Length: 300
Image: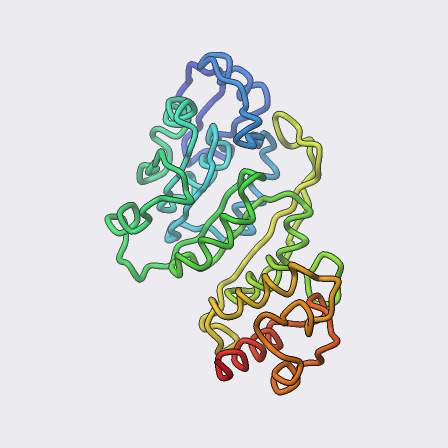
């Protein structure tokens, strides 16, 4: 059993070992101290330090040696280690330049191929420039990440629109965010993220995660959300048309849609779409939003 001792006082064991290398809470503290770092509140940094949770994420994501994986916000590399040890092709995108040296130290030499570390904001990254050299453009990628909670929702929604090659997602988010992404019509938490996510894929909460698995501990519970992209959208209306009406409808969610959508459609148009004008936004499913969008386009 080969093993290499690192300066950070934790062990990286060979892939043939029965054990695997993981960043423990103690190792994370030592790594932060040695690099003169502190978790950034502004960037929503809460580092995973529980090996069981990390292994669960990789298992639920279905990562194998043939997978192509994007990790957004790897931080110090707690999850990156497990992804690399699966021998998947891994791209880790980290915004905080101060963490990059520590991240490189942690993941150097893991897996059968090196982890590609990209210092950039995932919201503005030229993904084609990063991914195309690693795999053909039609290669499906999985997003597996402990997302910074302060940007999770816009990041997911933007990348679902912009990056069709991102076929599956297994992401850690704040519980409230996870519930909203997966919510169905009629629920008080059903809203804009619920409908827009449903346009692109099926979202479901697959596990709950307590604050104790993070350093520092957040003040909220977390959830693991899996999103599987539809092969084709379940409705014919263009996304832009649906999004426009959804945002208007939920912008005044307590009002009947005949009022909240009055700038776009008359009550007669809403009825022509097969939707009750007295319904409220939270009562409409994706199909009904698509019907409204199609009617609006045909009437203009």
